[in-house]
Amino acid sequence: MKAEDLRAIQAPLKQLYRDQPEAALIPARAEGSLDPNDIAIVVDSWHSKVTAGLHKAGGGSGELACSADMLLEAVVGCAGVTLRAVATAMGVTIRGGKVIAEGIWDARGTLAIDRNAPVGLTEVTLRFDVDCDADAAKLERMIQTTERYCVVLQTIKNPPKISVAIG
Figure 1 (tube, rainbow, N blue to C red):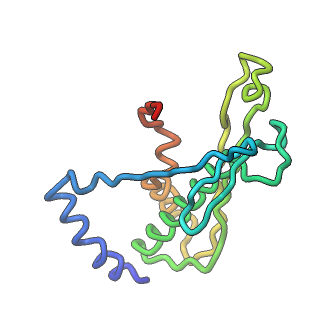
Figure 2: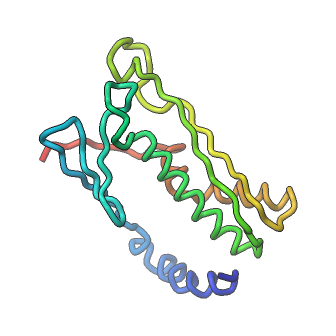
């Protein structure tokens, strides 16, 4: 896709969202079904189902998906798509590359071994290895712009208000 094609596709959407800001509030939803026979949940994903279970560090077999890895996969997916859109808008040709997210979590917190140990990812590194025709300065601008507009990355960096409900 070329920059002008992307602009043509997005122009009516941008105008709609300027004219009707409420139309820009896009709902997102995820759902899973608890597995009655295992410590697991079957998550409905885009084109299939993914069964998430305990990580090996928490007593799992390692055969089921790790939710922390799934979170990092969401960051990679969003950052990769955002990078491609930014590159397209900037007229940069991307020949290939990778987006890699890595994180660290402390099993002591999740297993309630140490109340002072954090629960959840405490360090996340997002790395871009991009083969493109941009010089170093333009590539840096592309990465900064990607960081600014990546929905999942910004959600992690600026956590939303979260409420928990029963039923």
